[in-house]
Image 1 (cartoon, rainbow, N blue to C red):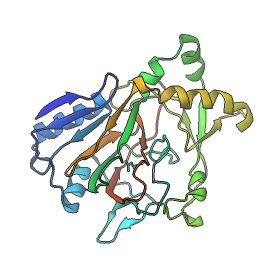
Image 2: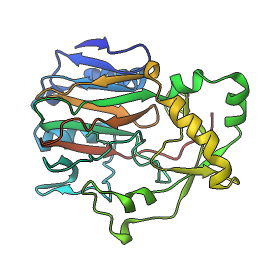
Image 3: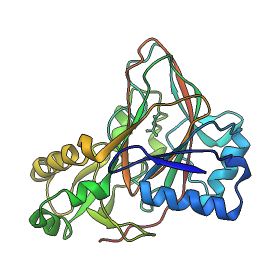
Length: 269
Ligand code: SIN
């Protein structure tokens, strides 16, 4: 397996590996690469839906997203589909998958199924680099705070998300700076799609600092960009990165299959 960094803070490209043929040693290398780079894109795969599920289950039990349309034949897989006539795409703003859950998904595994002739890249930003890039004073303050996360933004979704009222749950609270559950690394854990306010602060009081953090967290120097190719599979750790799907292929369709893997409750750094 060949691992090449994509940018200074986040992301690596892996070639010369077949994800359907991983032994324990090579799986552990993939997992270690995920924790050290936050996001890995593995090229030239031929993952059937069954192999996609089998790969996800090596990381842990599958966490089925309650808003996304399932793939008809494989309900454990979520469909991320852009129709040619759509002007917005699923995930088209910076976000963290499932931060609205009490135990947010550990990782997401996205497989390219049908790509537009240009565009449709996905960007990732390192939440460890974002935390490290703050002043000592702000780091200290943020480490004392928790923030409220909600799935409410799905109610306004215009991208084919199935926002049934029965899917919505009560908001949850997470530390603003979490310790990565495996490595202990600090990660800034607030995102523009799902974080509403700091616990004990009003949304109005929270907005200036949250806006600053959302913009800071996604600075170009903390990020990388994946250009998809047929057969590409990306795996990202939702505690370590935020991501953004680029809606720059108007008039063309795009189909991806996504599986999220169960995570755990998050502890402060
Ligand atoms: C997502 O937000 O999970 C989708 C990312 C993508 O389609 O590139």
